[in-house]
Amino acid sequence: MDGDLTTTSSVVGALVISVLLVALHLAAPRIRRLPFVPERVTGSFAGGLAVAYVFLHLLPELAEGNEAFGEALRDVFRPTPLLDLGIFLVALVGFAAFYGLERLARARSATGGAAREPAGVYWLHLGSFMVYNALITYTMALRLRTGVAFAVLFAIAMGLHFVLTDRSLEEHYPHRFPRSGRALLATGLLLGWALDALFAPTSTVVVALLTALLGGSILLNVFKEELPSTGRSSFGWFLTGLVVYASLLTAVTALGE
View 1 (cartoon, rainbow, N blue to C red):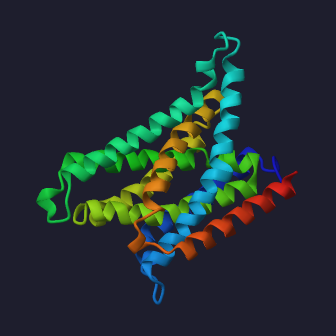
View 2 (spheres, rainbow, N blue to C red; view 1 turned 90 degrees about the horizontal axis):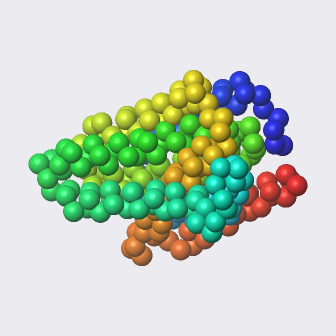
């Protein structure tokens, strides 16, 4: 299952996944409001799925990246307990950076009108999510080369996660985001893929650092968006999404052994 794709095949596969993620971004408002399906159902199902991804795939992936990071730097630096925390510190930076942007957006923006949506805060917030999206697709080809099934499950988790992120950004910027935000976030996905096609990551350390930075951002956004207040959520559908995704990950892991 792993390591079957050539570099060219993985880049083409990453393009296909990137295009599908672009489609999900652009269709997010319609997905959230599917006929006869309350928004809290789609949100809670996506939330359970994303939380299962965090605990069963993202956190183990960070641990593996930390081992690779430590091994790569042992010839340069003397091993220390602080060095052993390197990748997790990068993930913490990603978490804190997105949390700071979120606090800034909440403090400076409101849903009362375009005049109360500061342009500077909007572009800073949107730019950070464009980088977030670019990191997802920049590492997609590598994910496909190391494990097709895991890469596909990662793409599913991120695609449904985008639906909830879309809701948050539209609530913060109800006038600006529908006009330009979705298209620019979709552009970020394609830019990430293009950068990978032209300048594919070759260093284990670089890949581990990028994954950690993305991981910290994903952790914040998952727990912020996919665990909404009681009135906007359904525990039953949250548990359904969690069990479904956990079962898929468990099956893929077992088949890969």
